[in-house]
Length: 97
Image 1 (cartoon, one colour):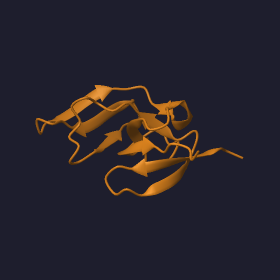
Image 2 (image 1 turned 60 degrees about the horizontal axis):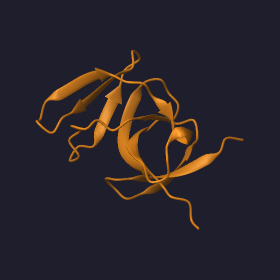
Image 3 (image 1 turned 45 degrees about the vertical axis):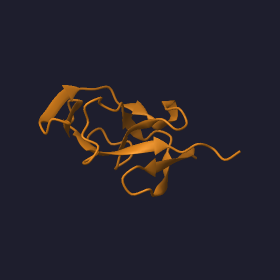
Image 4 (image 1 turned 180 degrees about the vertical axis):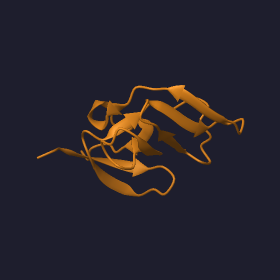
């Protein structure tokens, strides 16, 4: 059984359980937070809208959700562990004390 990790969608506030092997991407420093989404192709190139309103494409290295720290903001794959797809700005939910 895969371990589930709660994440918070920072656009909607929804808390969702995701598998620990869900792919994530580091948050680009110039990501337009109004859109707060990105897409990843099969060649590991991410495409997102920058704060300057331009489409940006760059090479990235996806990491599993289990490697992220509690409270860390990152882009999380909407389709779990798939190699390519849509990513949304989320934060790893802190564990309840």
